[in-house]
Image 1 (cartoon, one colour):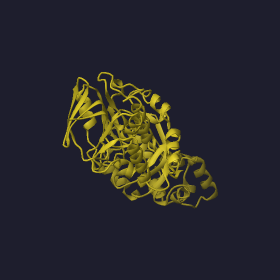
Image 2 (cartoon, helix red, strand yellow):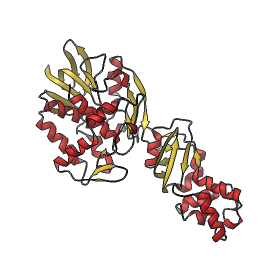
Image 3 (spheres, helix red, strand yellow):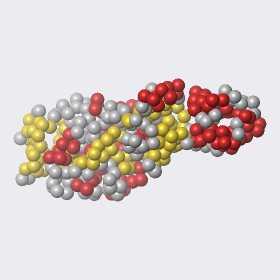
Image 4 (cartoon, one colour):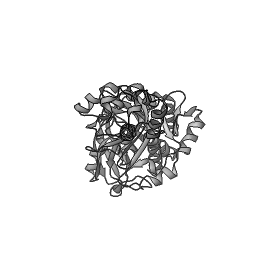
Length: 396
């Protein structure tokens, strides 16, 4: 049986960060993954350019049953710390929007940095390694794998959640957590497109492919980003963001013209261009197909081909509301297949917020997406991976 100081299961962002930090402290570290290549989620992230952090990352950008849990790790290893690491490596990057940082080149630069740092820290990376059994021993843990038996003083679970199963995602972290008596906050797909019922899909079919900036609200959360109509329902950053707050049966509210006082704009058009059709007026603010659809669906839809000059104030208000407060009840989401992250996971009640160690099982740690801490879209989940991995790496 090979013996290590630390075994980390999961060679993703959190696992690598923990392994590197522990290796730099002189610990003998094995980093295991069942995949044939490491860090596959990093590779595909950000359209292949890796949205590796967000300059605004802070506790308010995370969802958890305990919203205070993430504070310690995020304060002790910040976005600025990881940015400094990237800059020291010579990786060129840029801010896209809303504080999101991407590599100018490709996500491979981040992966290569992690691989090189792990090598320099004498981390043993073992791919195509399946952990078949984990047991607590008197002085640590024993693991049975397809490549033989391993033992360690500390064991770190960094296997993520259930999102993107085609990348190899499994419920391994939850199985280990249950084995050791830890509670699980029900995992559900997050940062995921929302789907419509057949009836709503039939209504919105003409809009498939239309994109526009919008403010989307649900359950007290509000996001202003791009919205995309699809042949299944709604997608785009604004929808992915709100999906973390939406629950089955909930309605979402959509403002399709965030910058515009719609009623005032329609009144002005009635006074100055009364001969224009309502959809023509709307097309100055909305994409044409969306303008046509809104005009047809509003209270004035029966005469949508008529003139804006014929609309009284009540009809103008109805048309304005169709733009500013479109309400729709999604039937569901696209699920794990397209979800970018997992909401829920190992309950933070079981963990130390400073070290990520399981309180009831000394030497066992859970980090990254496996924990019930989920970030917004835009680099926040990577920052949680770096921060939680770093925190555990200081003590394992």
